[in-house]
Length: 271
Image (cartoon, rainbow, N blue to C red):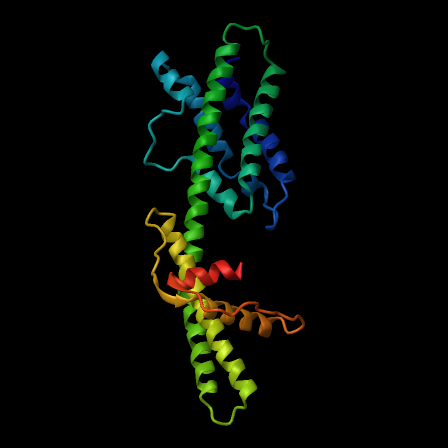
């Protein structure tokens, strides 16, 4: 029996093996039911069988073996499978392992009913591996795009939602520092809170800059005359308040003027 016909006629048996393997994958998310474990597997198998049953020129086989197939504007079952697996908590390695298990299951079940020395056996295996590799490539690409989209969404939400509470904290600290009833120690703490919140807001901005840098626009640098010793004093004061159980000593103290991006230099020193 030709392999593509075997897949079509024994698709339930293959899906059971696929489901059994998927059930062994441990994820931080709740366990999926049978439908969730199989999700797009049947559609992927039928696509593979259809591809194998279609005629193929030597040129088409050459292009397929090198991943040069034209991409479709319509989402494939393999692409949808990767996105749903990401939502279910599967890592990319686990998605790839699913394809490895699916490939092995199909060939093992087929060889149980098929002689390996049949004239069409090698050609069927080549066509099957090409089709599986194509589906795997589509899943990997779709998974990567989904991860990148999620990362950008998280950065966008982070930058938008954190600014409001940080602004409130900064205004509150500045109001406290202007209160005439505060003693010197309390005023210093209020000033440090304001400085720390200001730096936190800058970190959020830096995260958004990093997201832009990944798109090829680079990270903006704004140089200005600055005394680096003052930057060090600010960071040390912040560390002393956040870690009162330790003693932090700033050696030196000489002024060090130059043209720097004070925000970027503060990031370097704080690491």
